[in-house]
Length: 377
Image 1 (cartoon, rainbow, N blue to C red):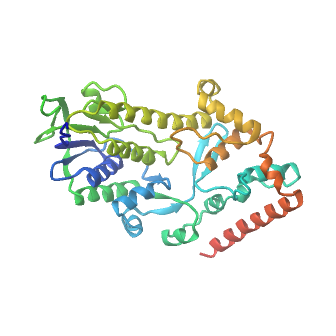
Image 2 (cartoon, rainbow, N blue to C red):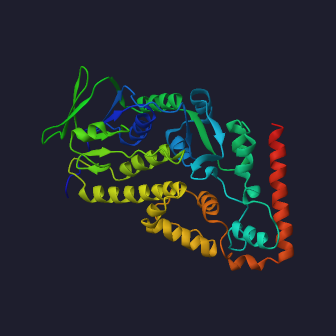
């Protein structure tokens, strides 16, 4: 049996939230008696907004790192958010984190809503979204209350505070944090593939991860594209649509951990990692292109074109492999850009027209009741 020699030293270089998030997650899963994790915390040259949005999936990271809501509130000024405002070619649109209405008899809610429109019910789909009701109400909900409501939410956090919280967690989990104004990365020896020099120290690494937004060190060792190359990883940077930045980074580093290499290499894992990463990046690009309404680009994106054509015809939303955005988010922008579909799911016809209109009114009434309750908090 071939001996699977673990990595002895993993070095990350970068700054801010990007570095802190990756450092905490890698420290959580990679630090051991055999493996050291060294985090080079560099001067942050990237000026970014003070706040950032964390999508609901980031709660998995917080659970994994055992970061409690009170720590997020006190150290990162976290508050619950239920949608993100995105710019598109016609203005701004709110993409909700939660679903519209509820599915019934095998048909998604928007098919019932679309049928109701044809019967003269004229309320917009947003009237049936608890997430958008809270978002547009601008309710500043404490996290404890948000959790009790039972509607999926993300977080708005102070970027600097969130970064400090994650970096402290990385240190607690055993990572060595080194402040460095200057970092130089060079190809190393056969034993240690990379040699890294900082202001006053030198390190040898089995594996090097460039967490910078610009890929400044990846370029110095000949890497032109993001991804896993031999004994290094250059992580992607996506900050549009709003809220995608942390989620994209989280999934990229979690994927790396799931396929963690050894000193022996890992060519099959490397190819699969890059394939999955490319697929996910394409799904993000699909949403960006649709928001931008770049007709030429859309025509060159088969998955997005298929989404649009199927939705316009029958209201269904095809789900691609490695989907990033929820059906509710896709539904919102597809309705905005493409209008109502020609047909609804025939399963929605199981409900009589009279019962359908009564049910739609009841659901809208419940949303209104929720808004009134939140106004009194």
